[in-house]
Length: 236
Image: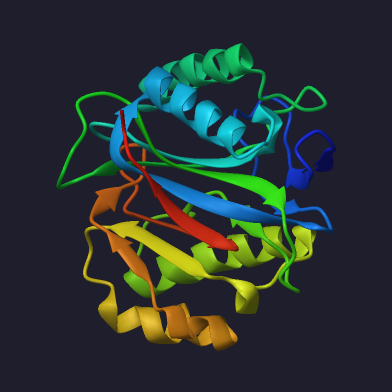
């Protein structure tokens, strides 16, 4: 469902029982900032750091519209559900709930190089007072619908993301960053099955992270955002 996080100044694709939204778009007169932690912090420390940074920017915790997480390794379905239970409690503890839903999008992957030793926060996206003539948005990571050849997996991810973006009223052409997670050789399919669909945003290319989706057996994941500002937070 399309819901409104009025306190955070963005609309989001929420779903009852899901610990993250499908994506979020800033309200009129607002935009998005994407902040990377210079080194990932454990889940609780990372959430606290995100809340502090957002507060220093003069924004409430509800302004947080997306998280990028890193986990040590892909999880079984039971372990993934257990992780989500912990994640939900953490979000509730910082007050990041809107209309009984969890409004922040999420990408959650296991890095195959530069691994973390525990679930950690890598980046946060939040809304700010700004306007640049195009919508600020952040989309949750989408893995392949089912395993197959690289081209079919890429097509399925792009299809799901495109559908969710249409629900939010945003477009690929406004993207400022597209991120791909995987270890497969995908170079041959990226131009035809991803970049050619982006329009002018294809000039930004693709950020590749040698990583795996959070559930065992999945191979690829893609997310996308459109933000006014990119910044790096120094871990203290």
